[in-house]
Image (cartoon, rainbow, N blue to C red; front, side):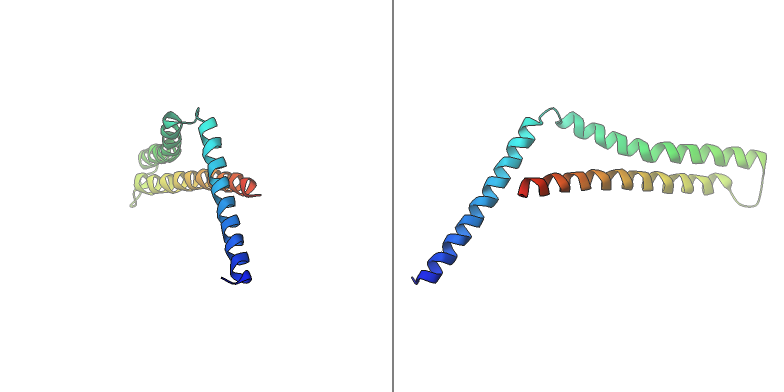
Amino acid sequence: MSEESEIANAKQQSAFCQDIGLQAARKLKARDDSSQGVWFGLGTMGLIGWSVVIPTLLGAWLGVWLDKSHPSVHSWTLTMLVAGLAVGCLDAWHWVSMENEEISNDQEGDNE
């Protein structure tokens, strides 16, 4: 082996060792945060679910009220149900994207 290939090999091994060290540190940090286990994950799914369900039900309720109060050719119930579902999905998407950004920032902080 030439000296250049030995240097390149040493650099690759060093980068590999750093990656392994970062992964191990992340796993240890996750283990320390064990209070956020299965129940935390289920609670998060519930939170996202309710953030979709509540606006959908409110939209349906408003649509039923509008259909009774102001009858028209078009169904207010269906219109408001879809509007509530859209609002709920946007709310859930916003919440999940914020959590994802926070996780990404934590991982970038670990890489430094």
